[in-house]
Length: 124
Image 1 (tube, rainbow, N blue to C red):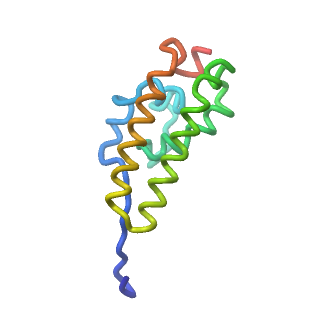
Image 2 (image 1 turned 135 degrees about the vertical axis):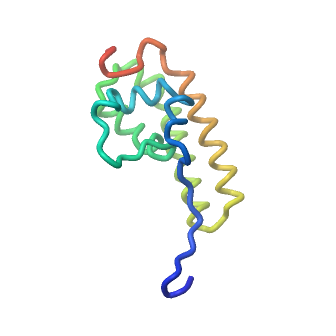
C-alpha cells in the first residue's frame, strides 16, 4: 500500500434490489416494513442480511418454532460470512469468491426453510 493510495479486496452487493428478489421470506423476516422504516442510506445487501439474521432471530419477535427451524441455517450463514471476510482480509479473491457462492447457497437453503406464512413479524 502506498501512503495515500489504499488497495482493497472487498465484497458488496452491486444491486440491493436483487436481495429481496432472491430471498423474499428472509428479507421480510429481517426487515419487516422495510419500505416504511428504512434508514436513509441504510444498506440492505447480502452481507447486511447475513449480519442481521442472528439479531432478528433473537430479538425480532419470531415464534419459537421459526427460530428453531432456522437456527442451524443462521449459524451456517454467519460462519460463511466470517469465512468470506477472512478471505478478503487475507487478499484471497479466489477463496472469497468460493465463500460468496457458498454463502448465497446457504441463504437459498435458509429461504426454503422459512414457512411461507411466516414472512414478517406482523404475521406472528
